[in-house]
Image (cartoon, rainbow, N blue to C red; front, top):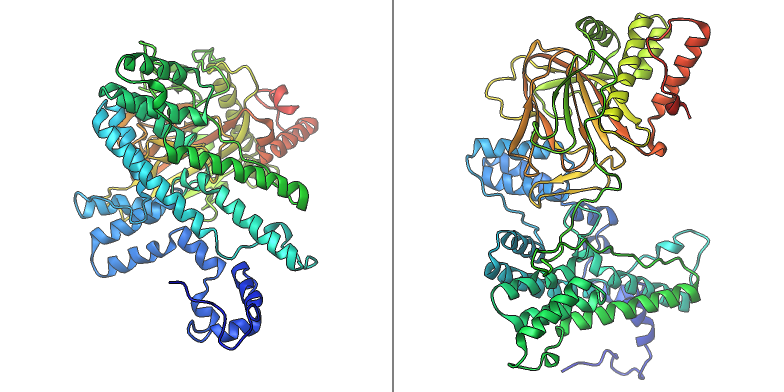
Length: 601
């Protein structure tokens, strides 16, 4: 039975109002003093924001990994590294550590110790669904739904704690009693309303899976149909229609299921699932309350819009279920003119087993390669372009780089031949024009980043190497091999549209450029660099790629990334254009080619 909170010998309500403010995160000092002794000092039971953020980013697992290595527990170390990596997919060093564990410890079954059960079962359900193993798919999707609603309940409870009202986090604002209460409960409500998004977001990601909860019912309606359970199929179709009542495909499916059930039972007796109905009703009420409060209390609130995935139809008219798919605003073409007679076509996308890929030779001559290599040795700096890290991707190689602007600056100052410095500028423009023309782009392709980079094998560190010079990645999204997805969100350079690598030499061992499937393991094409060879491709998840270990010598290339969005033009390139214009005016070294007039707008 519940006990009264009222102290003995006190009139009703004497102490309760003050102490009850503790629920709002505003506990008075005397109340804290009275109740603190059992809890200890505040610092011992309150985690700082930084600590909470570290746990959210799974930082303790990074320390655990090192501790397990010291204890020679490689399997546990691999699990800790994997758990950390799932929340930090951009961390290249941890990714390489995991590959090393796989090689050292043999076959390792990596376990994410912080995996969300509902997300794991959903992923397993999709996997079985794609293999047309519908009974297993149903089992996993149903379990995922049960776990989802359980997680939602826990998320709602966790929102009840103390809140920070970020809208008013400045010194001038001092909330009165009613403002403090309103601020707190609005934050609680916003937190609860965000649970839907929280549960749809994989660890380490910013963007949620589109249409996540309704997708369960969409997959299930078709899976139940395929196993002959038309009642469940109709129930799941109606549950999906709660979220998307105008979805024509699922409306057709529901009508079809009703026809299959005619004569056996009344289809009107089959209702949408109760838990889906309750969650949707609650979510709409929360939204209504938040919008009313925003208008009445004067704080900013925008209802998030969750996009719906594209519908995929089967040939026999039933919707197969919806999956997140990559979308593009432009029509993909290739095979346009190469513009320069000396440039030799080698392979297209089909021959390279992929999409939007091309391999070309003779983009620059042997003499130009040698001249560019000479200027590189005079301007490159260790760690340039990698935030000062001399070995950013592997400890077994040293990386050096330089930009076009730096080359022109050194040329203008006389530290390297100006003609050679200008060559770097000119060949990068030549590459841009070729890429823009070959892929038949109907808008200007701008430079996003241009980098001359050399990677050198470090002596004494090449025996039994099993790492990559550059791990498998995509250029404008975060590659997630486990989920077979590429997440277009920071810290990826999401604005990049096309990439190109122009090679300068072949006198080294290893260093092959490779394309893989999205699993980051299955190699689809391998390219051996040589002088004048250029590989170009679209920058998205359709083209995961990496570089095999350079085990002897130095491998040099001009790396180019391009964007179709002028807002993300490379600032240094614009400055380099200005330097070139100034040099032309002073007649200090005429260029072999004109600056693209479109690029000067």
